[in-house]
Image 1: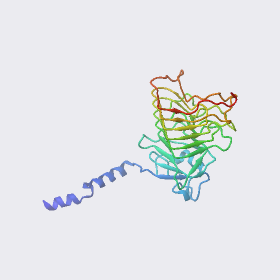
Image 2: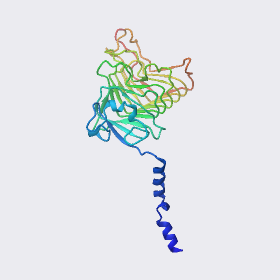
Image 3: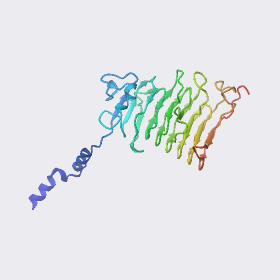
Image 4: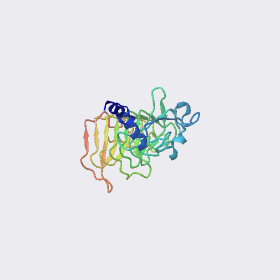
Length: 287
């Protein structure tokens, strides 16, 4: 009897950890990867590290997204590094809030991008990036077009020509729901030079979005939302009294801190707006 018990304990599939590993392997469950991208790419361009980073074109290729080693899939983190001149375009979704696809950088390898296009994909995290548009770009810093479950956090978005976080072109009636926009800094959004000068800093059309702890200075209308159960709280809306925003068309003589709208597509109901601080809501330039 003792011999049998000893043999059973030593059998590889009586060890709980071995059983778990065997299950994961048999189920084909992928483990999260760290992947790297620069504007031009480097080395073998397989995304395995900075020395072999993908290019922006590789990032924008749908075939590099999906299940499998070396592809961007749910739970993965993509580290951008250096200065980008190409709009980065998401090509797949995460699966839920616990397995978002994260796009970020590191303190040692910071990134500056011109725009991130979310297309219609869900469960993406954009964390800690600098987004600016030194050229005549006419797209928002972050574009969304029917995206759910995003986390946009701790980004520095500044000197853009058309908006901060706005619907992508042709997607103004798309529903973007259950997104979180928090702890971002926005400065000089929709600048007159090169841009349209008419886009709000943050626009979301959809339900149950949370916009909190953001700082917005020098821009046109700050937050515009369409839909149900959106929450806008604890944001700082700074000065707009600047020569960059004169009282001439298309620039208004004032900016709205918050514009809750409804339309034929979106009802407006159960919206919470609380504890936001508006420092200066008047542009005295030109009257």
